Length: 511
Image 1 (cartoon, rainbow, N blue to C red):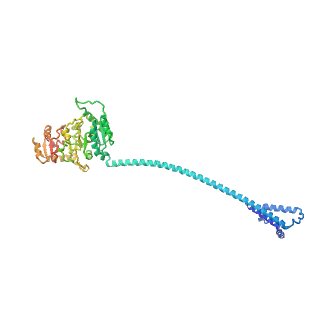
Image 2: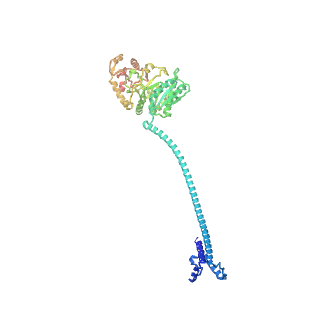
């Protein structure tokens, strides 16, 4: 661009000298060449042009004299001025065009570069957005998985909290409760409804089972209708062979069923304790609290073989104190609890029939006792069954079922431990007023204190028992409900006690 400006300036100077000769004269007077310029103002190319011009002027002959009109300085100068301005205009336009073209090209190049840069940045941003979208999709997928895991974890924690809460309070169930059933659906319903009335509040402590012997459809349907009860079914199609002709096969089936059911609960389900009920029983409101309190005693005192809710002499006229508990050498049955260790001892030698009488044998219980209440915690309404209603009207129907509220958790049952109970019971028997003779009943009636009546043998005991109306039955030398040969009951629902004392009872009691 500087070269072009120099060229334009050179042409302007030439035109000026042509138009204004005085400048040439002045340059001649100064000794300088009329066409010379300072070297700094002439480019190499223009300098060559001036030299050629000077040489051509020196070598060419002098021009002929111009016509008069041509020599007119004013006309020539005007033409030269016009030509100069035309030339200058052309050069300026050319320069402007070239400059504009150069600027346009530069601007186009800058815009192109800027567009390419923007496009590059746009691609980079698109790539970044795509990468971010992939990350967002991955995070959303991760969030969905985490939400699912969180829900599953919440459910697991809730289950664990319920299990931990149950275990922290109760550790393990106190005892499984099994109802032994066979072919009496109406009896089963009455029993279950009585149990559920009080079991719902302690269901985790006392899980409930129904064990059916046989294939009676109505019993099975009834048992399966209770969602909160686990159903078990014992089916034995083998023919029953009795040991003696004419025996009732039902007692064989019952014994076989009991062994199967207790094996299931103790061995398969691994319960520590089991309470056995039959399908013709109702329970007292404090049934479960009673067994929970007695379970601790059963675990700690190995001289206790089982805990029962039944008193054979629990008829209304023979009971008074709902808190009173006793030790007994006679197995009561009819709602009882035993431990797994005891069952593992009994199971291998379990009898084929008459299992309850078998448990009452001295060789089986081996001087261990049973805990029984004074007031029954079960009521047997089974007038029709395998026993054909034996003793029902006289002994079972008048049984009093406890209806008093007893807070068994606050009761101290340590008095039932063998040494303490033996001492306490012995003192109570010894302090009772002795009554002798065939008129013992009349004498006892006339006394307003506890009385003690001694019997000499089984026949003598049965005679006195008939007079009072208590159970006369013995098993293996032990009267029902007896402890060390002593049978105790209340006299006409009063606080007074009647003690029937065997010939060796006082010695066994240490009196």
